[in-house]
Image 1 (tube, rainbow, N blue to C red):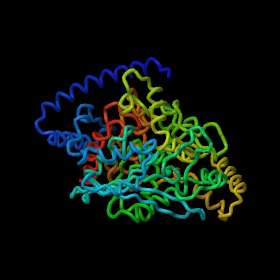
Image 2 (cartoon, one colour; image 1 turned 30 degrees about the horizontal axis):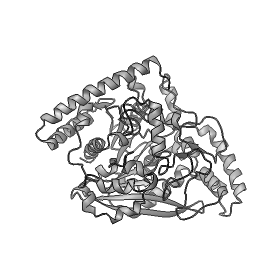
Image 3 (cartoon, rainbow, N blue to C red; image 1 turned 180 degrees about the vertical axis):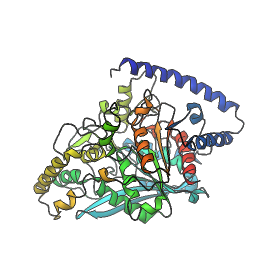
Image 4 (cartoon, rainbow, N blue to C red; image 1 turned 135 degrees about the vertical axis):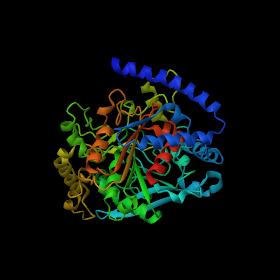
Length: 491
């Protein structure tokens, strides 16, 4: 991967800064007589930063972030789940096996949930891993719902790339968590086909092998409204009380759509939590006019939110080394070995997660996630083509599909009381450390402040060189920092 002069200088300074900061943190922690007191001090700092009404964005220094985590360890140190994962081919262990592990061993009660629902006269499966915390104070806080972004599923939030405890397991030591996987992105035992193989396809019904023509049609039909129906059902049937939805990456809009849902919306209590989430897709259309010198918001169609070169819409976008080298991997990745290039880290990641992670993404997800509403006509033509080729035995009415396309362009922005976007310092999709005021999340937060003048709209940057996948890089520290943000949202 070739880097420009500015990027090389920045990377060099980041590496040097990280080394210095790590040394400083080690000294600070060593001097601390009470690590839990350190958590309290840093939480107070986070709250102070979030209480700043005038700041466009605030930053938690790296030393403070790295010092967090005391009190978030699992009772068994994560050993039981790690052994379960390592015993399975490619780490693709059966999530229902977690139900057999005593909750006292984990610090939470695990339950695997599969909800089948109907939309467009078709059945769809959506899954959730429900982690009910043993912390007696957990019910004081909202259920924290994590929804995967593109080409991912629940595994990456539950365990890291070496099968050590992940972000959600640490969070579950304090609050109730449910990790939701969108339809198609989980398969028992994972995928054995190569990532680039057309035979590697989504599993829309977990217990049924669907014919190719039906799968191709579903690849086009899986718009945000289809997913939202499943999100509503799995949350309403399996949780009670307040909720916060953290829609990562492409699923950022799902939290915003759910806020306007008549059943889910009231349970937000006007709150929002973002992690690499961005904002409504329509803001991608207005940004070039409000920020004429902004970075391009569209992509090539291969990554997040791009329209790009047209291909048959039933074909999936598949992850590769090039796409994973764009702000998705850096030296905090658990697979990093000193001397590795960013490309080598990305290649190792793809290899390690080749089985349990889907590594594909429906094009409709990217089109609805970005500024590609101009492609709606193409989506309509492709949908009609695939309906015809499938024979349409479900009697799907094209107009029912058409009216739900690009719902992400019409998400409601008003009605929020407290919102916090969290972002990693090296998340190139959402943050520009060399030009912060031009970062996507700054623009999104500014737009929400205009619509919600009485709301507390905040943006906080975690200063370690965390990428878009910071939950895989420093999961325990991130869990502790996020817990403080959640506590601020409800205080």
